[in-house]
Length: 159
Length: 329
Image 1 (cartoon, rainbow over the protein chains, first blue to last red):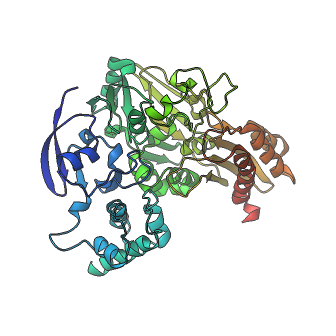
Image 2 (cartoon, helix red, strand yellow; image 1 turned 180 degrees about the vertical axis):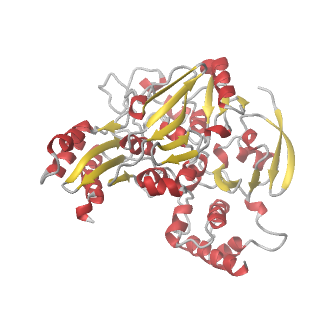
Image 3 (tube, helix red, strand yellow; image 1 turned 90 degrees about the vertical axis):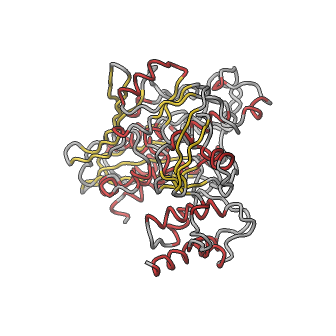
C-alpha cells in the first residue's frame, strides 16, 4: 500500500513525515521522531506504557494509527519539562520515590497529567481510577498515587 | 507486533462512509476507537485491507436528551463523554456505571459506545496471537471445526463481553442501523445473534449509527455490576445489568440482562415475567436469582472458573436487587 505524508503536531512542534497507513503512533513517535520516552510494553492495550495525550485525552499509542492524528495536538513525556525545569508531576515522581525501573513512569505521568488537566484536585480514588490502565511491577503503586496527589497540590498552589 | 498493510480512508460524513463501505465490501472494516480492532489486526484474527474511520465522522458524535423522547447518542460518542455527561448521570446513572466499567481511563477516552456495542465475542483460545493459535487446531470462530472451550460442542461459544450493551438493553434501548440506501431501527437485543462466530446481525455494508433510550419512568432505579479480576482493564467475567420501576407495593417492572455468560447479552425473560405477573412478595428475590442462574451459562473460555462465575452470578443478582430496592436503602 502507498506511503503518505502526514503532519504530526507533537509537543508544540509540527513534523512532516512519510509513513505507512498501518504505522501506529507509537512506532512513529519512537522510530521516526526518536521520542523514546513513550514505551512499548504489551503492545495490545493492557499495560499503559505507551500512553500519550491527544487533544487532552490519554490514548494508547500502540493501538492508534498515526495517520488518524493529522491536525491533532499530541503531548508525550518529552513535552512536559520546560528546558531544565521539570513539570510538577515529574518533580513529584522523583521526590516521592515513585520511580524504580522507570519503565511505567512516562505512561503513569501522562495518565496523571490527563487527570489533573480535567480535575485539578482529585481524591486518591480518582487518582487510582486514572492510573488503572497503567501497570507497575516495581513500586506497588502507593508512591505513584502519592506523587500525583502531591503534584496536584503543587499545581494548585502555583496557579 | 506489526500491523498488516492497510489503506486508510477518512470520510467526512455518514453518507461518504456508507459509500466507501459499499465500494470496498468485505475488504473493509470501520474503525472508531480501535482498541479492539487494532489488537485483532495485530493478532491476525481480523483481516481487512481497508480501514474506514467512523470515529472521525463528527455528525455521529452527539448526546441529546429530551424529557419526552429520552436519550439519543451517536455511535461515535466516546465512553468518556458519556461518563462525564451530567444529564446521563442524572437520568441514566447505571449507563454511566456501565461505561465507566469498560477497560480503564485510556480505553474510555478512545473507545466509542458504538464500538462497545459491536464488540467482537471473546475467548481465551481466540484472543491470542497467530503463533499461539498455530499450535492448536483452528477453532470455529476462525473458520475451523472445533471449539477448544467446549470440545464436544458443534458450535462456537465465544462470549459477548461488552459492558454497555446489557445496561442499554435493560433500559429498553433501540439502535439505528444504516447502510447505503437504507436505515432500520431495532431493539438493541435483536442486534445479537447468539452465534459466537458472527455475533452481530449486521448486513453487509451496515453500521450502527445511533442509540436511543426511552425517557426514564418515575421511580426508575437501575444498576450495573461487573465481576472482573482487577478493578480496571479486564473484560467482565459476569456482568449484571438491572433496571427496575417501583411503586408503593414494591417493584412493578424489572429487566435483568447478563453479560459474559453467553455469545450474546442474555435477557432474563423469566425474571421479568415473575415480577409482571406476581407483583413483589417475599421470596421473589430468590426466584429472580434462580432465573438468572438458569439463564446464564458461562463456559471455560476466560479467567474465573465456571463454578465461581455461576456462584457470583447468583450473588450479584441478589446484590443488584438489594441496591435498587428503596426499602433496603
